[in-house]
Image (cartoon, rainbow over all chains, first blue to last red; front, side):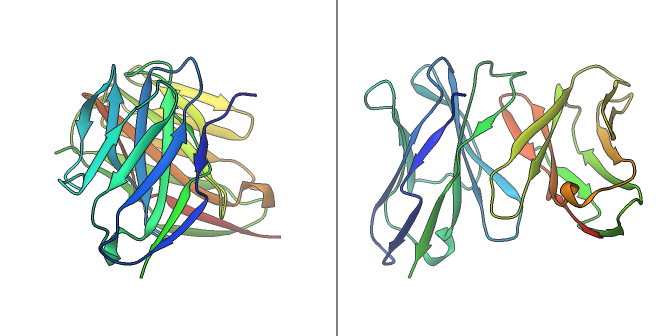
Length: 114
Length: 109
């Protein structure tokens, strides 16, 4: 069964460092998302991406964050200068349809900022 | 912006008891989805509701979408230990989907 894959599964970084989280969405999906979940808390929307551009972003997704799809398969989330409060599980998701499709989530990348 | 509230935050039940979680949105939704996240896992899609007043069933799970398309509920009949996890509603409005805070269900055998 096709699945969304994410790397790395766990990354530990120093505050102020740049981090890139990678995702390979399901191949025929057109809509891509990043969510984050601080330990034990809700799943928070960060950004949605369609047709090589951001379609929606939340208030969390500030100038420190960026996304891109560099090669038609990978979908990356970059955090430019990490802060302690960026420590969370980051989930990538993809869907076939944007407005009605179910989201398929990856296993997540756990980011720990020291 | 759109907000989705979900209650209760936690629910602990004896195996065999029923369980219900409720979602309310601050805005009218185009659809609502429900996800289950097992401890240490990722959210997994359960169902989507689109129509006003819609009711869908999956075995012991019953999902409802309110007439105004601003609230929804998930009811589990006769819980089992395999039902443990966090249940999230996710409401779609415009281009983004916002998750509720989730209800963490624990089931005592």
